[in-house]
Image (cartoon, rainbow, N blue to C red; front, side, top):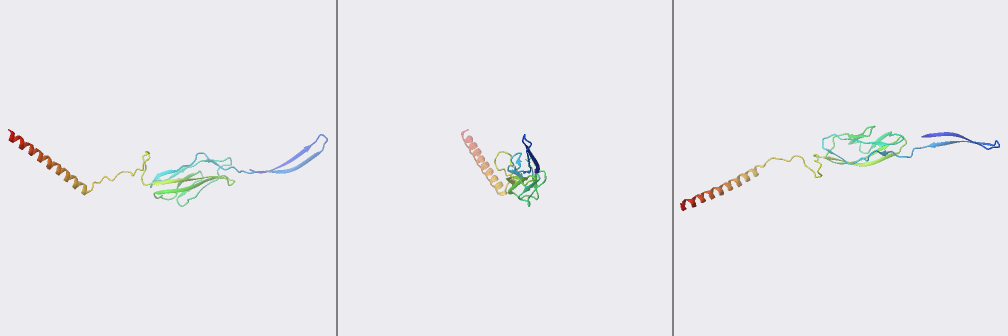
Length: 167
């Protein structure tokens, strides 16, 4: 990049000469490119967030930019992290990798903060289930067991009664 001064001379076989001094300006109009396309990220509530981004440019990456500096930060190496504890929900984040000549590549990604992790099978797991057994259910269970036991006792007594009269 820069301005280059050149002196150009032309001579013919008869010793006639012409010359001019010109400048050539080289500018960078090529944006950086993502080494891999950033994608949606999912984290568990309370976990720290860190996402390493990579972009390339012949002039180098001069700085990184993000749209949501209240919740996220990005360092000079392109690592995005949470700047605060993230609440459960979705965050949309625009990210730019900028070269020294104000060219940049940009992308918008979604960051999902879940109340619990998933096990990778595609469904929305809710984590450990509440295994407490309400008192009402216990009373119903005792009633059912008691009713079945009473019926069983009546059946046994009736069978014994029949077998005693046959003998």
